[in-house]
Length: 167
Image (cartoon, rainbow, N blue to C red; front, side):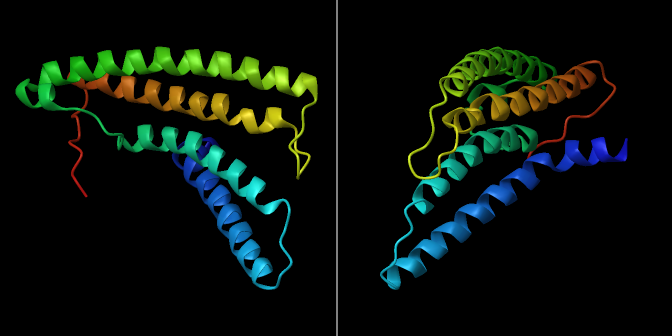
């Protein structure tokens, strides 16, 4: 149970750290190799694919930390109950969108895996690169559902909604 709890709290941070480390290391090595007149053929491709994964995992991380940009003009004018109701509505719409992206993203990635298409330099199956979309948005759905549960608890008076502070 502790392992599951740890993964729930840290999976995005772990994945973001791994992909960022790979991307920065590969780009650094590429710069050094260019300086030595011996460029790597695969480095930019790997950095690009790590960045793609970073973006989709980053969406989930932003939802988890509630750090996405949002227009809150209407929220400022509403009382606490209506703020929570509006947050529930927007979260449900986001869940619908995310499930749509997961479904069609998985279909596209699965087709590319079945076609056997590979990346030019690394020969990685392109379906694995495209799998970033359903994996990242799947994590986002999980985080949105967790937020939705929190909003319902606040609406029922079982929990207090923590205001996000500007950093």
